[in-house]
Amino acid sequence: MTATATATAATAPASTNPVLRVAPAAPAEAAAYFRASLVFHADVSDVAAALAAGGDPGFVVLDSRSTAAWDQGHVPGAVHLPTALIPSQAEELLDKSVPVVTYCWGPGCNGATRAALALAELGYRVKEMLGGFEYWAREGFEFETWEGRERRAADALTAPVGSEECGC
Image 1 (tube, rainbow, N blue to C red):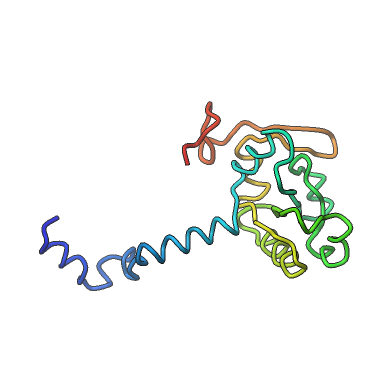
Image 2: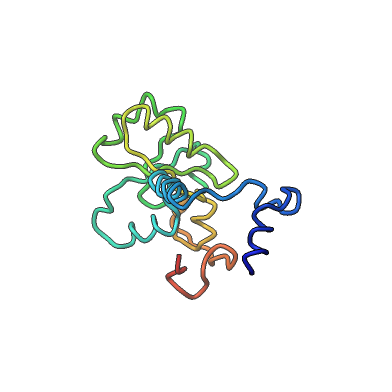
């Protein structure tokens, strides 16, 4: 792109490009935002890799869904604590010195966010697992039900098929 074309693109009417209707943040602002996002979020692949490495992962996984949902399937080793019970039961089940990673159903549900907020307000260090149980199962990670352990084939739209690494 020539200097003239670059200047024209930068000053073009907002209606010509909905992506750039609001200009991107300056690099330093963008770096701060994305760094902050990583402070608050973990994805299912990273959680699964940390749990699969063996030993103490340095965090506890918390399923904030109902008992019926928990019985349908949950991350192996997760603590079950529905969001509504966090204020009354968190201190019995969780150690405030250990970070907590919350999850709920999936990206269409804000239950993990509400659980993370409730825990943070009680003084816990917390992250939310992006994708929730839906993406845990869709990415082919083993899960537990009331009947035992299960695993579904990885969904090629959410996880690399035939590879352990997505390259992210």
